[in-house]
Image (cartoon, rainbow, N blue to C red; front, side, top):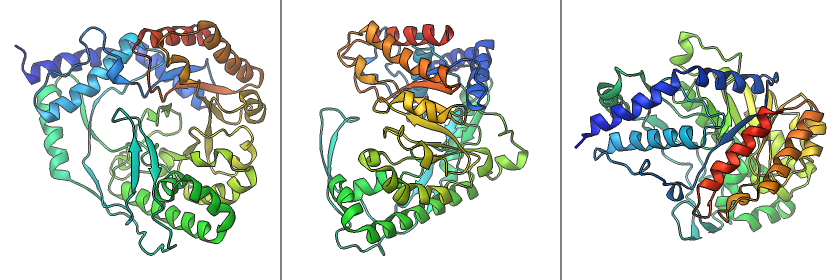
Length: 411
C-alpha cells in the first residue's frame, strides 16, 4: 500500500510533466497575447466545477491521511483531471504552491443570514440588515497577519516530500474575488438586497458614506497584504480569468514586497445589475477610480451585465479586461470595446444543467460571441464558470469543451 509521500510524488510527477511541456508554454503564449491585446486566437477556460458530480474512474477520491498532504493532493487531483478531460487552454505554473497562512480579524460587523440549500457549496441566502441604525463607527480596517510558523512548517514538509521533482514555492493569494474591491457585494450581505437598492434612492447620503468607508477598508487591506508580501506576484489567473500578461516582469525586490503595479486589481458590483449607468457611476465607479489606481491592470465585472455601461468603465485607471456575461448583449459590448480592452466572455453554464448538451444551442451561443468579437477586432477569452451542476453527467461538459476548442481553433 502506498504511503502519503508516494501518492504525492506520483501526482507531482504527472503535474511536472505538463508544467514543463511545450504545450503548457504555448498556452501561456496564447494567454499573454489575449491580455496584451494582440490576440493570436481566443482562449477557452473552464473553472468552478461541481466536483461532487465529476467522478469517473477513481481519479478524484483522496488517499492521503495527513491533512497537509491531503490538501495538496486534492488540488493536484483536480488539476490533473482538468488537464486530462477538460484541457481547453488551461496553463499551470512550473512550481507547487504552498499557500501562506493568512489571518484576518474582520471589519467589525458579521453577516447574519438564513440559508436554504441541499449542498454546502450552493445556497439561497436571506440577509438581515446589520446597518439599520446607520452606525458606521463599528466598521474598521481588518488586521491582516501571516502565521509564518505554520506557513514555513507546511512549505518545509511539502518540500521534503516532492521538492526534488519540482520547486515548491510559498505563495500568497492572487488578487481576484477574495482580494478584490467588492464593496457592493459586501454591502448586500450586510444589508440585504432590497434594503441596499432602496437605500440608493431613499438614503443616498448614508449609502455614499458607507461605500466610502468600505473603500477605505479595502485600501487598508491591500496595503497590508502588499507590505506583508501576501499577494501572489506570478498568478496565472485572476478569479478564473487569465492573468498572464507582458510588462509584469519582476525584479528581486518585487518578491520581498509586492509591487501593485505588477499585479492585477479587480472590481465588481454584481448587485448593480439593475441599476442605471448614472447611478452605477455615482455609487461605484467614482470610488473604483481611486481605489484601483495603484494596480498595474484592472479586471472589472463578474455576473453583472455591463454592455450598457462600457463608457463609465473607461474612467477606471489601467482597465484592461471587462466581464461580459450571458445577460449582456455581446454585440453591443463588442462594438463599444473594440480593441481597447479584453472581453472576458462568460457563456451560459445552464446549458449543462440537464446533463444532456444541446450541441446546436452551444454552437450558436459561442459563435455569436466569437463573431461579435471578430467583427469588432476584440481580444476575447471564453470563461465557462459557475457550473452548479452537470446533471450528474460530466461527459456533457467534455462535449462543451470540444465544441468550444473547435470553434476557437478555426477562428
